[in-house]
Length: 177
Image 1 (spheres, rainbow, N blue to C red):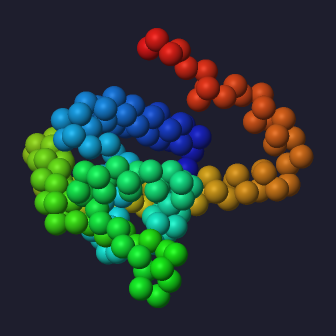
Image 2: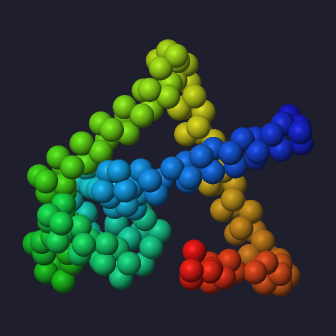
């Protein structure tokens, strides 16, 4: 059984990892010339092929209007192509363009190079084990958070009060920073 102390250590380690990734993400985006959300969308198209706008929105956990704006920008940059679904002309299908594929491969090579450099003294077996554990951890955390949120939001009448007790920091930003 996982002790409270070990769980607290894990929360701390995950916080440190999260800060490390976030602190360099803006600089990385500038270096590769693409936003992380754009790379995520391009990777999804690379892995799963042509998709509907609605499916991409669901996968990114955003609304169709948000993903449509993102796709429009990527389309203007020549990274994706849009066409009407032959079975339903009202539906747009999005696919990775040749330029998008080449750009994604270039960015991926850079990302892989960073990881290889950072983990140069780890062997493949050790690295695979860590990758498997991180993947399992991510899946379990998502599942558990959804379970807890579902339970609290559907059964806890004080949930709205509890949420309201925490200020919304997304609108509390200093416009000069």
